[in-house]
Amino acid sequence: MSITDSAVAVAAARAGAAVVRTCYGKALARLDKGSGDFATAADIEAEREILDVLGAARPHDGVLAEESGRTGPDGAQRVWLVDPLCGTLNFAARTMLASTNVALRVDGTTTVAACADPFADEVFWTDGTRSWVRHGGTDEPLLPSAKSGLVDVNLDPPFPNAPAFRAGRLLTDPGFTPPFRPRVVSTALAVAWVAAGRRAAYVTDGRMCDSVHFAAGIALCRAAGCVVTGLHGQPLDSGVGGLLVAADEETHRALSALIAKQFAAGHDEF
Image 1 (cartoon, one colour):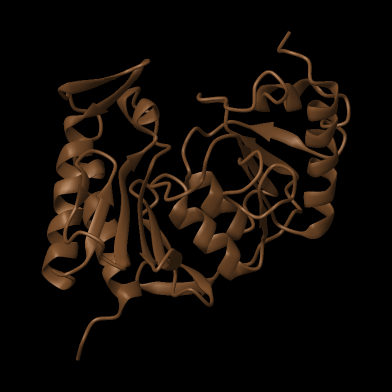
Image 2 (image 1 turned 30 degrees about the vertical axis):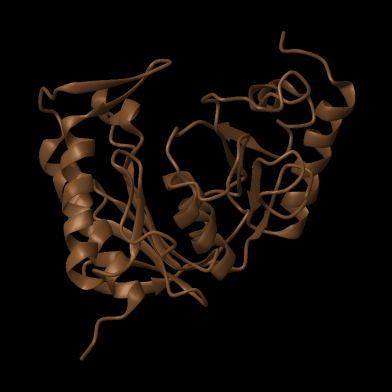
């Protein structure tokens, strides 16, 4: 029996997560990537394991990976997006907030995806129509909910819409704190948490087109029924860019209004 694309995504994400888990807490070599960013030996090894799984199961597909770049046939219609260790800064600081992300793009559309949490031993995955979390061999459907009121805001650069918009200013807006409580996880695992009902929303600036960091989480949220748009409520990869994903329409409207307020003011950070 042939293995499905979603099963390949889960297997690849789990292989990478196993490396991350094994390497946690060890003194690891670092590769400087500039602007304060770096990769560790765990990033490199995890990516190698993921590519081995993908190469064995789908040898004719292309790959776009965080550390090794684009490989595979030129002009491939099927391309796997791989982030072997999302949250490297957390991981290197011995903070258990990281994920391994794998997604498949077919003719520009993400069809399957998996986001593995190495430390909770959970895999969030989608076949493009529904989303689940797998733990202990059991799959449970992801059910978005805004009940927690927790909103993750990505404070990492770059900030392509500054000075008109800086995500950090949301945290000091007087309209933010009555309905919401801020969280800063610094890994795209938090996007999967919106699909799972563990976060009410997630906000980040930046470009989402073929993003190895966000493709898996976005696919999970869409399949789970979340509201997924750019910062202005526009389709992703258009306009000012960015990502606003919310558990429901009400939460999305409230955050959209706060974001629009920033753009309207157009002031720099204080």
